[in-house]
Length: 189
Length: 189
DNA sequence: GTCTATATAATGATAGAC
DNA sequence: GTCTATCATTATATAGAC
Image (tube, rainbow over the protein chains, first blue to last red):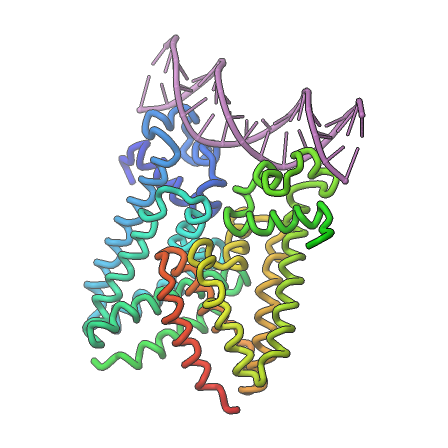
């Protein structure tokens, strides 16, 4: 972090605020308070608020790719790698309780705003979907792999939504256990 | 609908718009266009936008109670009644694809806004939770009933989120089948 | 590259005529 | 009960000095 550019600072702060407060609700005033620059200065780095969103999504895509690569290396077999995905709910449980899932809540908000970046934001989901499919394809027949990927993605989304609504971290633990049990049905390794 | 009061018209229009566009994004201008009254007239019926949200949540609570009562009468046994809940995803699949789940997307938005009505909005979830628990308690031991209720609630939330993000109705059908299969494990009737 | 000052539009909300 | 007119605030965005 020694030599982060102002642009990078803006994207990082916007990323956090969009997650915590939502995209529309987050104003340049909010971001400038964090980054400590004036509102006018934003327009040297970005043409519009939409462009900041673009950059935030790109950042999230890059971070997600990096995380998936890590899991690919760490997990010794497909089932163990899938458990890395499941356990992300545990790792991030405090933030999920407060703000929900960063991916699902953004796509949900952009859908309501009918925002042009809906497809772009959904690419984060697609990264997870394809990565999970790649794991499942080693455990089951080809046709089923994508369905299992979507199933698991959906399960984790539901957990995030309810943990947030009910302010309940223990519910996350319960459901993570169930997801791991479910996974064992397909773990032939 | 013959003699709906203006107040009722406002609440009905706001209910729809909050669902389709989100609470914060929906302005008095939007609502007034639907109800065909002037912006100033809102303040004869409500003191603030928050009060409209209050009324919308009350309306949703009443509608939900009515629906649950219907299911209670229609379903011949607990498992059949639970299937009424599951099938709501099929019944509303077009709107879910477009706007997600009205309950989950509102609680998610209010959490990000840190809005004082978060708890009130979550009561809709609680209605479903308790009703589902009442059904499951007839199928399993007491302790497990609430966990199963939350599990099913979470599953349906995840389905709604992904169906919306991926614009995929067929995914709803798939997951509904899985939920019905899952239910059979507990259907001892 | 960063700032101040400002333009423009929209928002929630109020006052008062009818 | 409904309207018009208006206020105060906030938002995104622009212009131009430094």
